[in-house]
Image 1 (spheres, rainbow, N blue to C red):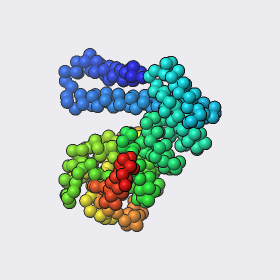
Image 2: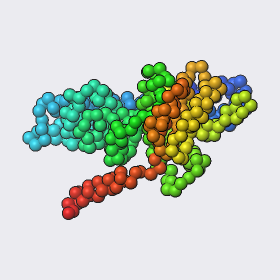
Image 3: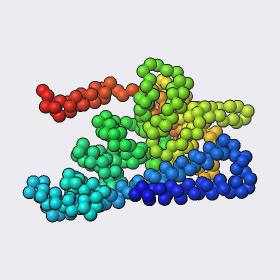
Length: 368
């Protein structure tokens, strides 16, 4: 598998190197400035990362297909832990002789049977979602959750945000599913964008973003909040979700001899849209919408390419009332969403998380 990844990555690198060679032949290589070279390097890195993600999904899908079929075999042969243990143990020994690198232990074979039993009667959407997850993620979902809708939610979130197994576990413990169900989306995407594009935008943006990674425990100014986000931009992009590329902060727009500055500007590859984010440390106010509407008009006029979709605005504030947001967005024709941010894990959730962990430890150690 590693050799296959290497081949794909080399192919992408060859494309980038060809670009450099062409410039060299024209005598341009020695004149490359830092910006041009930075663009070449950025493209090379993005190509390799994209290739690795695609290959990883293909590998996961193929592996899950094998595990699914082995699980079905055990299920159809009606092998159960207990009287069937001897058969599965011998099967493991013989399979490991033939395929020593596949991790075909008796425990794994029983897990494959559980995997098949859990999903063979499930809806196609759920089966498709878990089919491309890493095996460890699937075992975690099977062990922790019984509800199909919850499993589908966490599977899709994992795929969208690239969660590791540890991040998935934390999301389950924080009951992110219930939080998502409670949230009322405050935006006008359905009214300002074509249906298919609006559906995609709805999937990409959230009503609440957790900025706990900033470590802020005291009130801060908007400029300080922005500076901290810039310093930890990678973590912020991970919280936003997959597909975001950072363009700049305090992004300057000039029109009619006047200057305007967007707090943070991103581009989303899947949406093919510029995304402007305005940071507000207090409660939502209606005038925020008018300001964002102006920024989006300027971005569409000055920055948007012909093949790109309309720019999208997100107002990120400490608190919002969905009725206030609804009336403020009522006659706005630019796609704008209003989201809250959390600087720390809510006290109630933190207490629940700690208590659950303590109870789990006591149970493992048989403590009273």
